[in-house]
Length: 218
Image: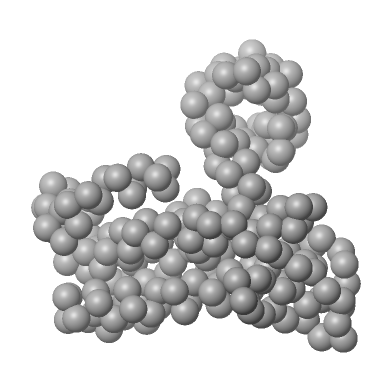
């Protein structure tokens, strides 16, 4: 076990036929994949070098879990809490009616429920962003294809050559201005492919308080 900022983590080491050490966080466990014959001292030093990343990643997972509380029956949308109802039906689906999210499922297994919730988040975000996309299309004189996916480590991706932007469905939990900041960020990538000073100068031109929303998403 290891203690990082008052959080106790278990360590699960798996030796594999690989060249480098990798780790991932699963609940309160640091899962390490290491080459055969790697010493425990080397593994411990690697974990210590990644303590900041481990803690930040753990906190992100906690925040994501808090957005949907199946036991309490709540879900956070646009930084506001709404009632969440799960009902068994002969077909799966979802509906957002009178500020309540209804999940219809054939099975009450949590895995199946989470699949439908993810579908609902995509659908809700798709509707939310329509006026934002229309606004930035006019500003930048572009009409990219917009896709919404469940992204674990990014809020958005811009594929310049394919004229496409992919947005994380997890954005639906955040304030509208945070969502708008991510969308602007990806549109500016059509003009500047990196995160240079020029890139941020364009962002600040259209959203002077961009850093405020960026910080909320970190």
